[in-house]
Length: 304
Image 1: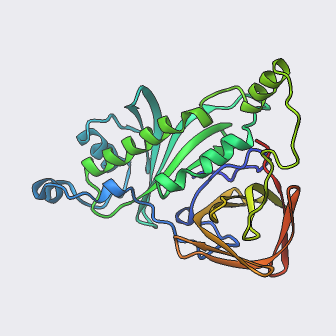
Image 2: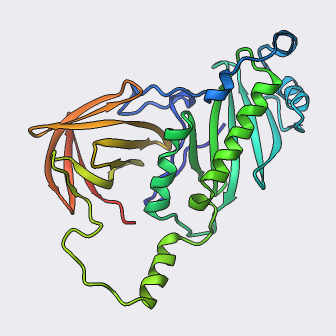
């Protein structure tokens, strides 16, 4: 069982989806938790021989061994393994959730040093994970002070080859995003060192600053905190495309889609059937307010 994370900006990380049991302001967000290649057809003899429902660590370890990976039992429902892919060797734990008929996967990326944070730029790069791998999320495990990549697999018809593909897909995604999570040195520090040795250019009023688009949308990257461990991060492009993450009680939902504005009304229409509409006000380079029912979110620029 994963413990809730203690939220602190800028360490706003993608945590678990609704499959991990969270209730959120966006409770109707529905995100598929299966990789595209996991649904690829398999040979009928393999499926008939190996497909089934896993009910414990023993069966899970057997599946891993049949897929060519080592599996070590860590308890009645948990197995650990290591995945070597794209030059990385990443440890992972797999836990059977019989009540949900799912397998929870947590792949360890690295341990954070005490007081270490990630820049907003790295954060937003991790948020966009949903664009390329729906259902896979980066999370900060506060109890272990480490970054993880998580995924939830269906426990129906799980075969050794399907399990291996899922784990290797996660490892490849970790390698793809390694620039964002892999450095122990915050990119903000690198930027500061660069600016100290380079003559500063004369700033312009709108240089690299979030601003309103021609359609009145607050383009750029924004973060809002509500308190009690709840926060939002959103990035809106000039064409209205958005990436959104909402974290509450250490759990999160994410969505991507299209943002539109009609008068003072901002509507977010997600590809996952998400539909959010609220009153927008005070749009400027310094931020904006979005009122959703009785809740007013005050968004501020996410510093690069």
